[in-house]
Image (tube, rainbow, N blue to C red; front, side, top):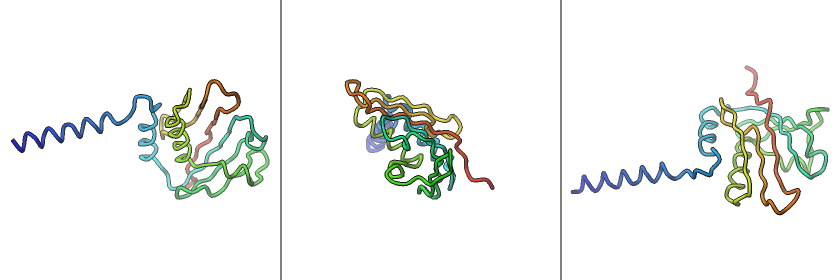
Amino acid sequence: MRTTFACLLLTLATLGTACSESPDDHGLAAARRQWADHLPAAYSFTWTQGCECISDMRRPIRISVTAGQLTSAVFVDDQRPVGEPVRGYLVTIDGVFDMIQAAIDQDAAKVTVEYDPARGYPRSVLVDYDRQVADEELALQISDFAPPAN
């Protein structure tokens, strides 16, 4: 009887784990796992944001990350370092995953994400937080991802 009960509990626990990913997670859980499996110790990428915001926020920015920390951010067009307040809005790839999760948790009206098929990082993110409100959307492109040259 104990063995049967233990097997039943194990089966229920396994089913609970398998069902814990929401079908509305927009592929986030699978992409995070893929990213974690391929996460380099250091990497860089180009961040391009679309928003109703100051012009420097819309300029392409080259971000470098080491050991999970943003180590540099420069504007692509002139290589000038990104200063405040723009730098305060920049995040690592893990931070972009967190932004997507926050939009899902906030029950955003629309979340559209395209993930890199090889590494799992988000290449394109579009969030419309509220269809009734103008200019609160998040549009983000991640491009030119590269681990450091050896």
